[in-house]
Image (spheres, rainbow, N blue to C red):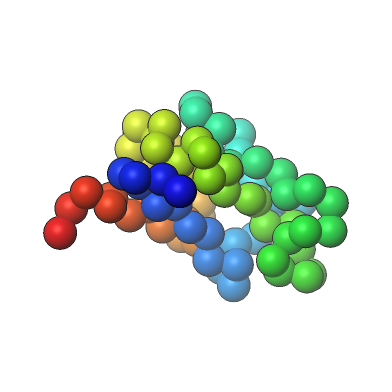
Length: 81
């Protein structure tokens, strides 16, 4: 479990890796990855998986947020009140 950053993807907003996958391409610390075959939480599309052990490597560069047109990514700083 990450101590500083929690990254989530809203499955209902995400376009999936086939139609987008931009977060996977732009993240410099590999917080996002293609989900293992058949394990996506959205049955009609392959939603990127968040790599739990890489979340605290997030540099808050916002590249994923800029790339995500449907605004499906949420980054929460756990160290702020």
